[in-house]
Image (tube, rainbow, N blue to C red; front, side, top):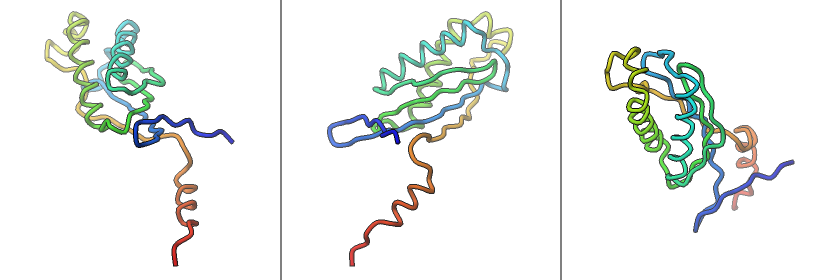
Length: 138
């Protein structure tokens, strides 16, 4: 059986993985190969600034999938908000001509919603069983 690899801070050990899915505004199919490559670069740099790690990245014309290893000091919702804000601002600036055809010069790129899921580690049923089997003090 594989042991989990833990990362460490001063007073904790952790292994936090999240699967993040973000979609373009109105699910418009506006992500091209060059735009996707630029998004990957931005997301990689941003996760490093937050002392986190981008483990996997890919997407389609209307959405992205990111596998992230986040630091416990980072609130996932705050991180996602920052990631969407920064990527939107830079992509709208760098790909302005392309996006103006799709969004008619409105300052949008991402939908307000997103999906973030925890992943990795033991299944919940195993964790529940482990907790149930603890030696309760008498």
